[in-house]
Image 1 (tube, rainbow, N blue to C red):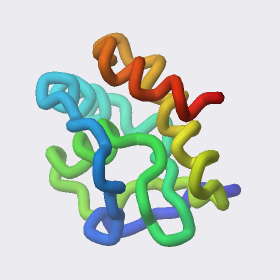
Image 2: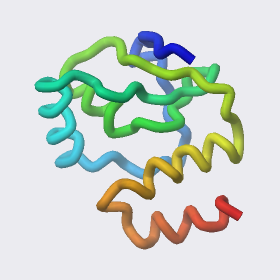
Image 3: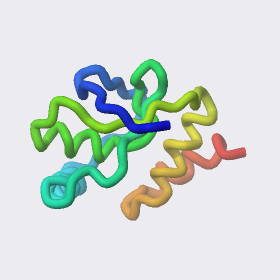
Image 4: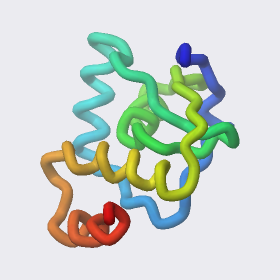
Length: 106
């Protein structure tokens, strides 16, 4: 699917998502300001965020009103697994967040 611009105010977060790290958001915002957004965030058809929380928060910090998004048909467990997959590459994912994710991956 081709990425599309979506108003940031229309993007919803699932309850229970872990908080974005302010220091990481600031670093990412600096990078995005310099290089641009290299990877769009991923949302579902209802504009609920699946992947890209830090990118979304960095865009807000930069004062953007729209962000490039890939809209996917992922739902339920598939959407959760996509979020977990992205979080596993984060260097600061706590052991508790990692452990909480394992039951979903069965």
